Length: 324
Ligand SMILES: N[C@@H](CCC(=O)N[C@@H](CS)C(=O)NCC(=O)O)C(=O)O
Image (tube, rainbow, N blue to C red; front, side):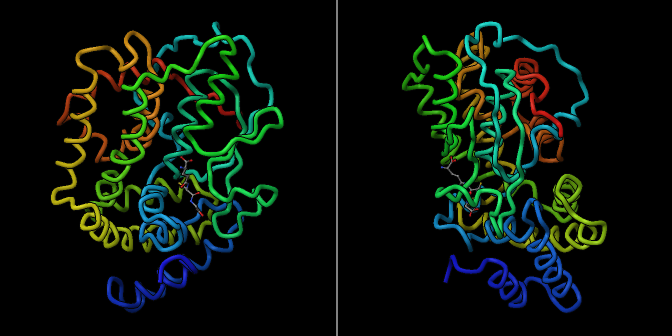
């Protein structure tokens, strides 16, 4: 049965074959220790979600876990970029913006790309995916949740639409059919090819988990156990995901998705023309965290996305996240 206890179910799944003996105990230890870690990015959730064990929607669960912090990914970037200043046009900048997130959630990374592009300063509260105590006050139990000067916003696309309206009160949301279509494509298609790619080989799984555990709130021991056990478990899980999404060659699927996006640009600088549209920001938001992993490097080497990606990096600039 899906959906009741991801940690227990995953432990059983691991016991059932993918991982054995001492390694199995390590994975289980990692799951348990991360379950109890306050403010952890949810190692157990990461794994459980990948298996579609604890989310009402397999698709959402699967996609909800394999991404990394945009802020930290940016810190890995090799080049410094000058930033455009869309803020100059913003009439009313929200004062108190708080993003409740999982560090690894693609929907949260979409919102962060929007905030960064518009230079809106925001605080981040990492939600414990097991206890969710940080969002106890909310009836809505998913992330992202954004509070903007006291107003609660949920659902990434709605958040982005509402924020847009808030900071551009006299303009309507630029939601051409084309832009809407590609924003939906990000949620329904693009996100599904990422997980099989970042855990494709054991070394890529380790690279990914090195990142997750370095940026999450793990103790030294938890980090060590989670990194190796998690990488091993996700290597196997990613094979299941490939099947679930009918992917035969994960890199080809990634390249194909990316080329589909480049084709959609039809030679324009951005889908939005001379400036990024909401769809540009959504695609960039979910790809930014993988850019400096092996899969992201391969993506840039083997597709035509490099130039668009660099333009987006320059346009979005450094994260406007307030470090606490
Ligand atoms: N359609 C929502 C999807 C949000 C979503 O599914 N978030 C995942 C994390 S990436 C979540 O909170 N899942 C429920 C859970 O973790 O309990 C959005 O775009 O914001």
